Each structure stands twice: as structure tokens, then as C-alpha cells.
Length: 199
Image (cartoon, rainbow, N blue to C red):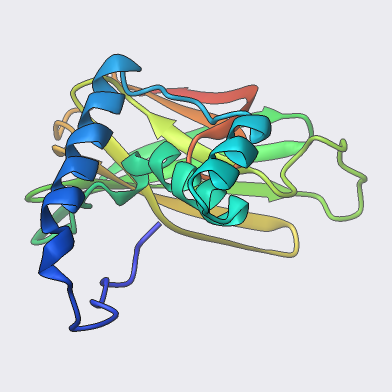
């Protein structure tokens, strides 16, 4: 999702702690390398012990480790510029009472944008694990970065926009767009459900 620009919360900074802050950055890098950038989350028992040992609040430490877990969310996002053309896709998949469609790819000089549309019949009761409170992440391949920039829903319909960089080829034949369903945003709690479009 798009983020608001971060505003420095205060002009004050105690230069006596600058070296310590740099050490914190070095330790974060070391933590990423040792864990292969997949650290998980410390057990609450460990957090409670650290909070007591270092005179810190437990909820503060939970927030710190939660932020470290979602570092990818803070990666700079490509903003599409210089719209070039639409590429017709016109693909649909029906699954568990939901109708998923991709109509087109919007091509820009530095990115592509796709919109996943989801429709359902409001007069029919959907399965408990259907659209409600779900998030979709788009996966294409290691060479592409894709991010959901915005989304929304109303009665019987939802849509999600994704920015892909670098841009897809103007002839995307053979490309697979894999939408993975999650119970929470930022790639937590993958449900195992996938909606796959082969172009």
C-alpha cells in the first residue's frame, strides 16, 4: 500500500548516541544475514525476559520486532510515469463463488499496472473462508517486484491495483500472474489459496 512520507518527529538528536545507533543498524544487518532475511518473531517469553533485563516495555519490544519482520513493506515503491498503452487481457476465473477478472495491463515507461477485480452474488451465502478480510499479493518471478498500491470493496465487488517493475513486455504471452491469498497484509498468514492467470 502507498505510504505517507515520513516526517522527522523532532529536531532534537543527542549526538552522544550516534555510535550506538550505527551499531543498532549493523546488528540489524547481521540479524538479516544470519537468518537469511527470515527471522520470524521471538517468543513472548523471550520478549518478557528482555523487557525485564533491559528495563524496556514489552509492547515496545513487540512493536520493534514486528517492524523488523515487515521490512519489505518499507522498500521504496516505483511510481508509474508516462502512460504508454493498454494491453488487453480479458481473463477470468471462478472459484468458491467468487469471480476473478483481469481486463487489461496498463503500460508505463517504468512499470506495469494490473487490477484484480472480484465479483460475487450478494444473494448467495459465500463460504466462511471467502473474500472477507483477505489480502492478495501478486507474484510473477524473481526478476519482478510487485506491490499492491490500493484496493477497496463495496457490495458484491472488490478491486486491487498492483504496480509491477520493471514493466512487463508489451507482449506478455507466457507470463503467469499468481495472486496469493493472505489472512493479514504484508505476507503474513498465507491461506494457501491462489488465483493464477496465465497470459
